[in-house]
Image 1 (cartoon, chains in turn purple, cyan):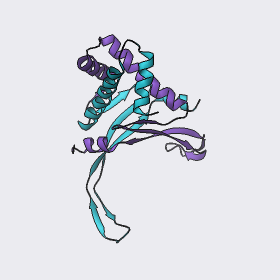
Image 2 (cartoon, chains in turn yellow, red; image 1 turned 180 degrees about the horizontal axis):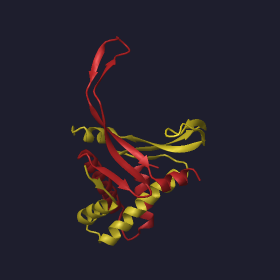
Image 3 (cartoon, chains in turn brown, cyan; image 1 turned 90 degrees about the horizontal axis):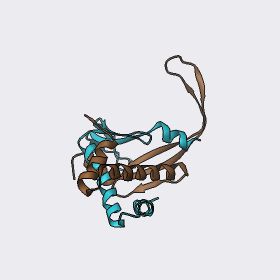
Length: 96
Length: 92
Protein backbone atom coordinates (compact mmCIF):
# COMPACT_ATOMS: atom_id res chain seq x y z
CA UNK A 1 0.00 0.00 0.00
CA UNK A 2 1.37 3.37 -0.96
CA UNK A 3 0.19 6.86 -0.15
CA UNK A 4 -0.89 9.23 -2.89
CA UNK A 5 -0.65 12.99 -2.31
CA UNK A 6 -1.71 16.12 -4.18
CA UNK A 7 1.40 15.77 -6.37
CA UNK A 8 -0.02 12.67 -8.11
CA UNK A 9 -3.40 14.34 -8.54
CA UNK A 10 -1.70 17.42 -10.04
CA UNK A 11 0.19 15.08 -12.37
CA UNK A 12 -3.07 13.42 -13.47
CA UNK A 13 -4.55 16.85 -14.36
CA UNK A 14 -1.35 17.79 -16.20
CA UNK A 15 -1.45 14.57 -18.27
CA UNK A 16 -5.19 14.41 -18.95
CA UNK A 17 -6.02 18.07 -19.49
CA UNK A 18 -2.76 19.44 -20.81
CA UNK A 19 -2.58 22.39 -18.43
CA UNK A 20 0.88 23.35 -17.21
CA UNK A 21 2.00 21.67 -13.98
CA UNK A 22 1.72 25.03 -12.22
CA UNK A 23 -1.87 25.63 -13.40
CA UNK A 24 -2.80 22.01 -12.64
CA UNK A 25 -1.62 22.48 -9.06
CA UNK A 26 -3.38 25.83 -8.76
CA UNK A 27 -6.72 24.52 -9.98
CA UNK A 28 -6.46 21.54 -7.62
CA UNK A 29 -5.78 23.91 -4.71
CA UNK A 30 -8.84 25.95 -5.71
CA UNK A 31 -11.03 22.84 -5.72
CA UNK A 32 -9.77 21.73 -2.30
CA UNK A 33 -10.14 25.23 -0.83
CA UNK A 34 -13.68 25.57 -2.20
CA UNK A 35 -14.71 22.30 -0.54
CA UNK A 36 -13.02 23.27 2.73
CA UNK A 37 -14.64 26.70 2.94
CA UNK A 38 -18.06 25.25 2.15
CA UNK A 39 -17.65 22.78 5.04
CA UNK A 40 -16.24 25.49 7.32
CA UNK A 41 -19.34 27.56 6.48
CA UNK A 42 -21.50 24.78 7.87
CA UNK A 43 -22.71 23.18 4.66
CA UNK A 44 -22.45 19.59 3.43
CA UNK A 45 -20.62 18.84 0.19
CA UNK A 46 -22.01 16.27 -2.19
CA UNK A 47 -19.83 15.01 -5.04
CA UNK A 48 -21.97 12.72 -7.16
CA UNK A 49 -20.26 9.44 -8.09
CA UNK A 50 -17.67 9.97 -5.31
CA UNK A 51 -19.39 10.64 -1.99
CA UNK A 52 -20.86 13.07 0.50
CA UNK A 53 -19.08 15.02 3.23
CA UNK A 54 -21.70 15.62 5.92
CA UNK A 55 -21.22 17.68 9.08
CA UNK A 56 -22.22 16.24 12.43
CA UNK A 57 -22.47 18.03 15.76
CA UNK A 58 -21.05 16.13 18.70
CA UNK A 59 -22.11 16.96 22.26
CA UNK A 60 -19.67 17.38 25.10
CA UNK A 61 -18.92 14.14 26.93
CA UNK A 62 -16.57 12.72 29.49
CA UNK A 63 -13.74 10.74 27.98
CA UNK A 64 -10.81 8.96 29.50
CA UNK A 65 -7.18 9.09 28.52
CA UNK A 66 -6.59 5.43 27.66
CA UNK A 67 -2.98 5.62 28.77
CA UNK A 68 -3.35 7.29 32.16
CA UNK A 69 -6.99 6.52 32.94
CA UNK A 70 -7.57 10.17 33.80
CA UNK A 71 -11.06 11.41 32.99
CA UNK A 72 -11.31 14.54 30.87
CA UNK A 73 -14.08 16.62 29.38
CA UNK A 74 -14.33 16.31 25.59
CA UNK A 75 -15.57 19.62 24.23
CA UNK A 76 -18.56 19.77 21.87
CA UNK A 77 -17.33 19.67 18.29
CA UNK A 78 -18.23 19.41 14.64
CA UNK A 79 -16.94 16.40 12.75
CA UNK A 80 -17.16 15.29 9.13
CA UNK A 81 -18.78 12.03 8.23
CA UNK A 82 -17.82 10.87 4.75
CA UNK A 83 -20.31 8.59 3.04
CA UNK A 84 -18.86 6.99 -0.08
CA UNK A 85 -21.11 6.73 -3.13
CA UNK A 86 -22.34 3.38 -4.43
CA UNK A 87 -19.80 3.70 -7.28
CA UNK A 88 -16.87 4.24 -4.89
CA UNK A 89 -18.04 1.44 -2.61
CA UNK A 90 -18.14 -0.94 -5.56
CA UNK A 91 -14.76 0.26 -6.82
CA UNK A 92 -12.97 -0.58 -3.55
CA UNK A 93 -14.57 -4.02 -3.55
CA UNK A 94 -13.36 -4.81 -7.04
CA UNK A 95 -16.77 -4.92 -8.67
CA UNK A 96 -17.31 -2.19 -11.20
CA UNK B 1 -22.75 22.30 -2.36
CA UNK B 2 -23.01 19.76 -5.15
CA UNK B 3 -20.49 18.71 -7.76
CA UNK B 4 -22.03 20.98 -10.41
CA UNK B 5 -22.03 23.98 -8.04
CA UNK B 6 -18.37 23.28 -7.32
CA UNK B 7 -17.63 23.34 -11.06
CA UNK B 8 -19.46 26.67 -11.46
CA UNK B 9 -17.61 28.29 -8.56
CA UNK B 10 -14.21 27.18 -9.83
CA UNK B 11 -15.12 28.42 -13.31
CA UNK B 12 -15.95 31.84 -11.86
CA UNK B 13 -12.44 31.98 -10.36
CA UNK B 14 -10.67 30.72 -13.49
CA UNK B 15 -12.07 32.81 -16.36
CA UNK B 16 -9.36 31.53 -18.72
CA UNK B 17 -10.85 28.03 -18.61
CA UNK B 18 -14.17 26.86 -20.09
CA UNK B 19 -16.87 25.35 -17.92
CA UNK B 20 -16.48 22.00 -19.67
CA UNK B 21 -12.71 22.02 -19.01
CA UNK B 22 -13.33 22.58 -15.28
CA UNK B 23 -15.93 19.81 -15.39
CA UNK B 24 -13.33 17.52 -16.95
CA UNK B 25 -10.70 18.52 -14.34
CA UNK B 26 -13.09 17.75 -11.47
CA UNK B 27 -13.73 14.35 -13.08
CA UNK B 28 -10.00 13.67 -13.34
CA UNK B 29 -9.49 14.60 -9.66
CA UNK B 30 -12.21 12.31 -8.30
CA UNK B 31 -11.37 9.52 -10.78
CA UNK B 32 -7.78 9.62 -9.57
CA UNK B 33 -8.94 9.36 -5.95
CA UNK B 34 -11.29 6.48 -6.81
CA UNK B 35 -8.59 4.59 -8.74
CA UNK B 36 -6.04 5.00 -5.95
CA UNK B 37 -8.52 3.73 -3.34
CA UNK B 38 -9.60 0.86 -5.63
CA UNK B 39 -5.91 -0.16 -5.75
CA UNK B 40 -5.91 -0.16 -1.93
CA UNK B 41 -3.76 2.94 -1.67
CA UNK B 42 -4.18 5.74 0.82
CA UNK B 43 -4.76 9.32 -0.34
CA UNK B 44 -3.51 12.14 1.84
CA UNK B 45 -4.33 15.76 1.09
CA UNK B 46 -2.54 18.04 3.54
CA UNK B 47 -4.84 20.42 5.37
CA UNK B 48 -7.92 18.60 4.11
CA UNK B 49 -7.76 15.00 5.19
CA UNK B 50 -6.84 11.45 4.29
CA UNK B 51 -8.81 8.65 2.64
CA UNK B 52 -7.89 5.08 3.41
CA UNK B 53 -9.37 1.66 2.75
CA UNK B 54 -10.23 -0.49 5.76
CA UNK B 55 -11.19 -4.14 5.72
CA UNK B 56 -14.31 -5.40 7.49
CA UNK B 57 -14.13 -9.02 8.63
CA UNK B 58 -16.73 -11.49 7.42
CA UNK B 59 -19.50 -11.99 9.98
CA UNK B 60 -22.75 -13.80 10.55
CA UNK B 61 -25.70 -11.44 10.61
CA UNK B 62 -29.34 -12.11 11.36
CA UNK B 63 -32.05 -10.93 9.03
CA UNK B 64 -34.36 -9.09 11.45
CA UNK B 65 -37.43 -9.93 9.39
CA UNK B 66 -37.21 -13.72 9.27
CA UNK B 67 -34.51 -14.26 11.95
CA UNK B 68 -32.43 -16.27 9.51
CA UNK B 69 -28.67 -16.22 9.72
CA UNK B 70 -26.82 -14.87 6.71
CA UNK B 71 -23.11 -14.84 6.05
CA UNK B 72 -21.82 -11.38 5.31
CA UNK B 73 -18.54 -11.62 3.37
CA UNK B 74 -15.44 -9.57 4.16
CA UNK B 75 -15.55 -6.14 2.54
CA UNK B 76 -13.56 -3.00 2.04
CA UNK B 77 -14.82 0.38 3.17
CA UNK B 78 -13.45 3.87 2.55
CA UNK B 79 -12.54 5.81 5.67
CA UNK B 80 -12.01 9.57 5.75
CA UNK B 81 -10.02 11.23 8.49
CA UNK B 82 -10.35 15.00 8.66
CA UNK B 83 -7.06 16.89 8.48
CA UNK B 84 -5.90 19.09 11.35
CA UNK B 85 -6.32 22.40 9.57
CA UNK B 86 -9.86 21.59 8.40
CA UNK B 87 -10.81 20.27 11.84
CA UNK B 88 -9.65 23.56 13.37
CA UNK B 89 -11.64 25.59 10.85
CA UNK B 90 -14.77 23.55 11.58
CA UNK B 91 -14.36 24.18 15.29
CA UNK B 92 -13.11 27.75 15.26
